Image (cartoon, rainbow, N blue to C red; front, side, top):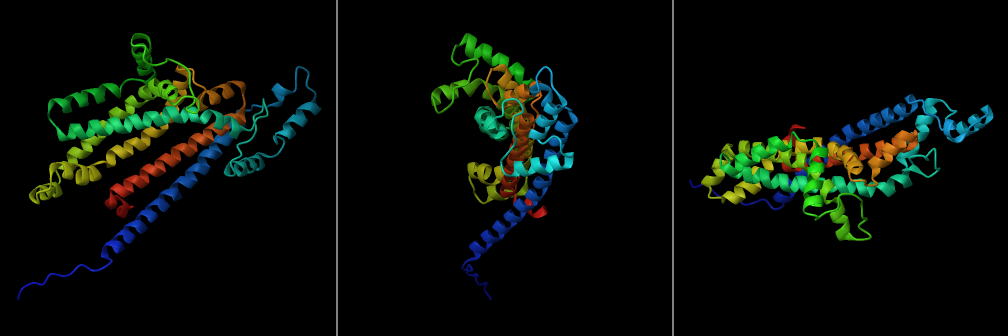
Length: 338
């Protein structure tokens, strides 16, 4: 008796896609279940830090000879005369509606102040992320494809050296190279993209490159390690036996299964990029969110500091959520284990 070939079931491919889609939605939902409590806990700590600081706007706004009535009026104006739990619930309700409060010293909404500065910080951190992912992925893939060769050794030396350099040292070195010696890029200042796109790219080039060095090094190292491990799996041998091209094996099968460690490292590097943007803004005299937080902290403007911390928390959680979902898409096995 000869075996009969079972015809393909109509709609089977759609059923598989639907099953994978449901699994991805479940994975995303489980990630959100973790992110939401983290957000509320982080914002609670942020609020309590402002309360614990003991700062009071009445000390700066009441003048040289304040009266108890003036101080009480100022405290009532900002809601500081109410119990701390009531203050937190009111502040948290505003946060959930996009209202981060009002600056104690200039009366401007904190949301407005942050929206004025946020594009600068996002330009630096986003540019560093793009450079880090692009160059780190390229070096990691090329190093794994040529493992044991001279290029692989060069990438390993570069990654080990670059990972040990603080960003501000790299920034100073790049200022010397690109601004003072080659005179190609400005060493300070910021140009909005609405005014001049080319000027905007030139103004963020050095800060973004300096901030991306650590990301490039770690991403290249982890991606190289993951790809080398994936290349030794049995399914790679099977793909070679079936006659698949080395390019298809590397980019379709191996990269999908070996990118996990690199994505995990990338999730850890995003908060460092946001924090590093603060240092970059100080070095390159750029009016970003980090400078706003630092200046507000020196003045004791608690609502502005709290607002910048909340925005930073949201950015970190959103980026980690995106990376976790991407990890679940690239590695269905990890999604099933979750």
